[in-house]
Length: 151
Image (cartoon, rainbow, N blue to C red; front, side, top):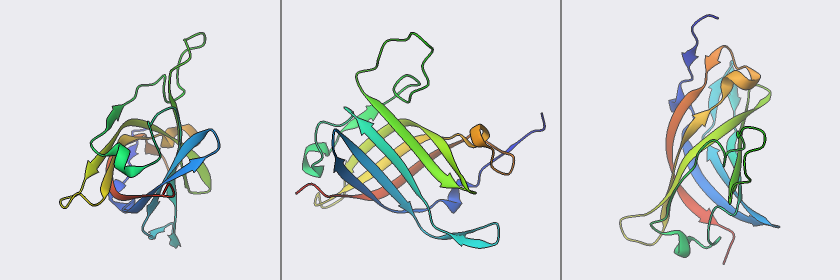
């Protein structure tokens, strides 16, 4: 197999993150600023469903929280492995395909004046799974201001 290049992650520049309370779980939507892909302006987001991952949908309860995750929590466990206490399901739609995303950590960082939170996500885009212009699976770290529909 030919060497694959890492995806230019700077193209995926987050504008904001939104935490949504859904029935039975929470969802994170990390919106990226529009960028040019294959000659067209593209808008996309990183979508992460969270099952028993966070203690609360309220940002005030998440300040300072840091969680790390492995393959099992991301749904990539060997058959017969025990069910994890929490799980995540992340994906990024790009190039006409949904690409799985492994989430390695979530951190909820208070901003300087302690009135809001910044979400920091570390993970890996799995572009080899569905294929994206011969890009390799690519690690990333992103930061975005966090909003929530929980009031």
